Length: 193
Image 1 (cartoon, rainbow, N blue to C red):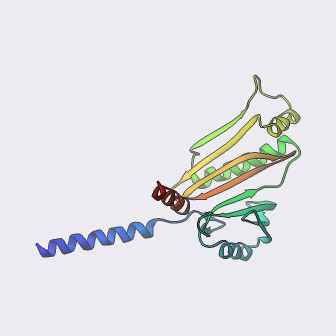
Image 2: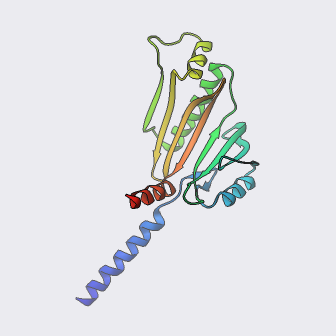
Image 3: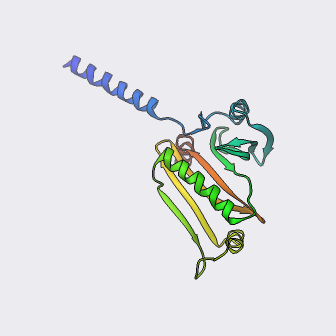
């Protein structure tokens, strides 16, 4: 009987340690989204990005990503701990809808090849009829009357591609949320309740 208990306990310990090692962080450019902000920025610099400094607690870098030159990368940490959990990529701005939508569709196809079918996809204009020219489509985006995003859920975190604007500048944006580190904040918040 003691041997059976010992075997069961050993099996449970082995399975729990396997489950812990099986959990992995979401990766960006092959680097797990984890660690301190300084350590992560150092890894991104080693991957070829230029460090542009820190703005509002987010490290800002610049470099080439997914075949696009001059992308801006934002690396954010959890506010309660200095642990990286979110990466954002702003692709070069476009001054016409055709180029902007082409960038979005190209990235979407690559993400589908890598991560499979999206969990959610919304690509629509908030109007009675579809805008019929590129200038109007771009204006709708700038006026927040256009919703374009595709979300992918992976075991290690979520990824969302969207079309965004800041003032008159329009661009594709890609965000990565690491599941392990994002759940740490949720757990801490639950402890507060």
